[in-house]
Image (cartoon, rainbow, N blue to C red):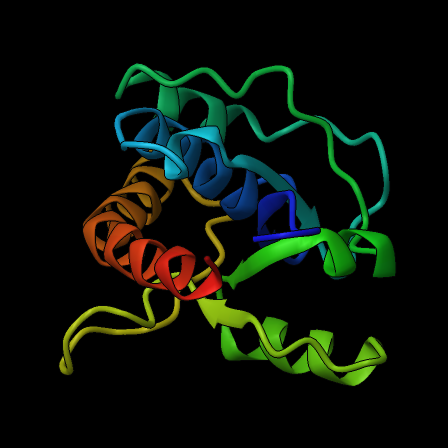
Length: 162
């Protein structure tokens, strides 16, 4: 873990999915043993403008499970964020491809949020932007379903970094 300070969640504009993923991941990490508990979580977007507020439906979807992301503002994905991340979790294969094409050196630690679920599960999380609250809640639930597999992966990753 030397030199790697945080986990990074990535979507397109950093106003819907990646802020929700970051909130859920932070919440899950708080219940883990060290060193997972001490990991910070950041989020960014491959096509984000800086300073945009998180979508109202994202805030509501997470408030309904006791997590507050209301203060989040968007930030674009940068080389600095990539370089400091222990692992990067994207929502779609397109996000992963954009990261691998835009950044040099190509980061090796880019995963899909749902990548560690068993076969038969959809690995991508669709964009809820512009949809009704129930679409954001379904997006949140897809993220929640993957959290145990993400935690198991992180335990293995950290054990390998010691």
